[in-house]
Length: 217
Image 1 (tube, one colour):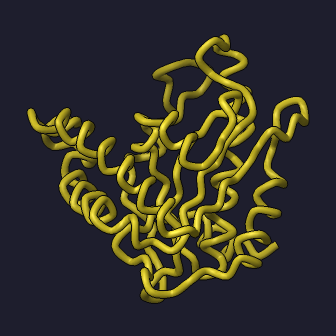
Image 2 (tube, helix red, strand yellow):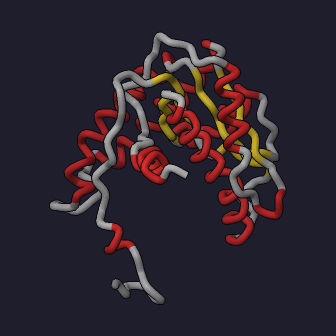
């Protein structure tokens, strides 16, 4: 296995918002192959309860984009009083640029050629912590695998969740059963430019605890 290629893929798979090519369609067979790869991800009890709703219909994309904008605006109201991170924090410095990028997607989501809604069979509202963890653990790794597979083929994606403020309305748009939970909405399109760089992150050492919380090596 070529570790340099693997490491590059893992460290440069970014949430792509500004560099999505809104004019170029994504081939259905490419999407299907990437989903096939995604379904090799772990699944609790081998339940394989995952589903991916691929949305290319313009009217449905527009309807989902409207829900996303409504959710985005709800979150924006919570940021009106200030940044969600303390002054001097790396994330505080990055937040304005991230917010501008998210606002760009808000304004153009309906133009993105493909929206994908990953789902898992079951509901979280009445499940205990262990069942919730199992359900999320059975779909989120598959979604990340999908993003990696897309990235390897020159296709960008943006993992969003703002439409979930109105999950039932999205379910009505897409005919998703009440017994199925939506976990995200991916904006998917070929990306422009050549490549992406690793992001600046908080030091891994500060987030790694050895044999107990707060114990660093």
